[in-house]
Amino acid sequence: MDQAGVRVRAFKYFRFAAVASIGVALLHSPIVLSQTPSAPEWRTSSFDPQRDGWQRDETILTPANVHGMKLLWKLKTDNVTMGMQSFREPLIIPGLQTATGTKTIAILAGSADDVYGIDTASGKLLWKAHLKWSSPKPPTPGIDNGFICTKALTATPVVSPISSGARVLYVLGTDGYLHTLDPATGTESKAVQMLPTIYGKAYGLNLDGNIIYTVTGQGCYGVPNKLYAVDISNGVAFSNDVRQGGIFGTAGPSVGTDGTAYLETGDGGYNVANGQLSTSVLGFTAANDALTLKDYYTPSNHEWLTIRDLDMNVTPVVFPYKGRDLLVGSGKEGRYFLMDSQSLGGANHETPLYRTPLFSNKNVNYEREGTWGSLASWLSKDGTRWILAPIGGEAAIKFPISYGPAPDGGVIAMKMKETNGKFSLDPVWLSRNMMTAEPPVVANGVVYVLAAGEFAGQADDVNGGLFSWQQRVEKSIPAVLYALDANTGKVLFSSGNQIKSFLHQSGIAVAGGHVIFGTFDGTIYCYGLQ
Image (cartoon, rainbow, N blue to C red; front, side, top):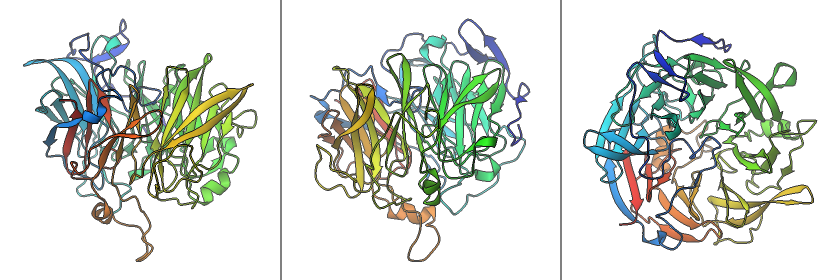
């Protein structure tokens, strides 16, 4: 597959046995696993293809008892960091048949192509797999001194759904190949090329039907910033035709209920005639192993946003509403955009359903403020649609509920309202201060968020140039896990000083009473009730 996005047939790398009845392609050694999960699961970045971060099946942890969470276990691994990269967001998969019985396994992909499978009940390492290098291009030693391109594994893996009839773990390695593993044992089968060359900076894999998607940012090592896909039923890899500005949403693309893949683009060229759409929200459809631009939304001030390096840089969150999908996107600017999937930006592609006032980044800071990563959304019992977002820096408005000064930012909550056909996203609460809040997740009325502790500064105003990743590591502080009341943002639980390192784009998984994440120093933590 070259940089122009020409389709590649990859059978010589990835042998498939198509199983039409279940819509999943298995490798030459079929993976036969338990068909009934023993507990809720977390099988993809931000919980589901819509990237709403809403764990619907959690029943153990509640707003009434979450204050009693304890550190159940922690596991120090031999993960090798690459720049600031360490672990990706965990997956939690129940009902896996192992040599020692049925297990719920937490799966974490490490930055140096190592994947770890941990028994969530005991914290014991069940397996470790090192991805087999599949590219004809050999790996190159060392990493860059900067924090942007570091040759690290940066895409959260995905596991096929229980409805597929078998569980398959897909991991995108630094070789640019999509690797297939047995999630119960870590045993790897052969791989298919997904990216045009090695060391692309990809983000969360998203599996919809037979298509696995990812996006890339930063143009690292010659990999164009695009939406990439693999059809796992036939082994064909394909991408959109036009390279875009950086695509930075850490949960990768979101996928609507109709199969449309959504992404945001950052700074770059803007030319509607040739499909180059920087600083925009794009929607693509996949058919016949090709991607087609379906629609797009571009903020009316996109030229100013580009000049000020205020990228659109989150994974849009998608949710159903009155028979169609709605989306919310954001970026460094600190505003939020509510879009209708039937017409993202109206007739002129610049008019969403609603555009908020400035909620954060009143300093127009391109480094540490605004919103980064991904969002979350949930529906309360009274039918209220909530939107959650991490913010950096002080809020630009007064929230109805807040908990003192938050100079470093935290998490904000909004409610979507529709009145006489007019929509709004109304601010509700701002959490306590958090240094570099990771994207929140919500489960059973509780919002979980990591104050990552990461020093997110980029420009060294004293010495000139950019900070190295080593300098950013030195300036970071240990992370803190918080559990918040989803309706008010009140702190229900804090891990205090139990966590000994920071994290960078690692994320949280919640399932079966377990809250799991990894930190920069190679430690995996699990919180829950004893």
